[in-house]
Image (cartoon, rainbow, N blue to C red):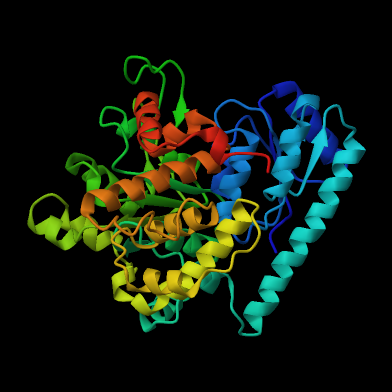
Length: 444
């Protein structure tokens, strides 16, 4: 097992430093963060430690961070640090999966005691997973990529074979099929598992800042660059870089990225200094890159250099026999995520789920499972008459917004930011679909 580690998250620098020093004196290895942005890059199924986070922080707060960690691995212990007025919120967090909470002011001995118990629990979880894998039982890869169809059996076999190597990999599949899940699995079973996993959405990078975001820059490299900055490539050294939807990378940038792939070096903007880069690259694409090459939108040499190994993630239409069991698993995961009792899914709902098309693949199926657990509909249909395209689109959109509201505890800012819409648009859609955050997020 990798060295046990504490990831300590607190926006108050003095408290963060003093707490880290006290924990190190108690014999722990501590890595500190002023916010939760980079914590998720270190979390995976093989993460051997504990997360300690303040519950009140700008940006990603402790509750949201915990929910995102549980989406990656629900058995990573998360300890929340609360102020006196946050105790009720902390109790709610306990119901939703937090390992424990510590109220300020606290002693180092008290926090260390809770962490030791959490470390022991995490160690037992990882040991149990390893024993199951050795015994040939259902392992982490099967839990994350479930399915009995031959397409999924073949995919898991290739993930296990490629994951242990350091080969750059191209993952191809439809939107929502689970390409990032496959990428994280490759990272987590590799020797780089304890290092960062940096996901970069090539389609979302601003065109005027894309090189700075990836390569970093020196002061004066461009107007507004007043201090040096690491790029995402450099930040991920020792780990894995996921280039999501690489087909969206601008053509002129593809040549520069090809050099990075070939030589494993980068130069920050405004600098001639060459920085060695020890990373593994994984790229995903929902489009046929060979067709993009033929159309002149993607470099042939980059495609040939990138796909040392290629994985094809099947759509749900290509593995329809897996849909019922996959839906039941997603319902169980949703119930655990939202702190609800385990739900018995009626046979007629399972039959309906199995017969329907799922153009949004696993992502759409997960939203249906969330809505069922939250009591918003019967597993995908709000009404028998909702059969037209417009009605189904509206039904899907309502479910996505409702799920996001619950996932973020009724806090609107992370909802509209995560959905990529404005606050005004979110308000209008909530009014259109009759969504009230007070109704969706209660103490009951």
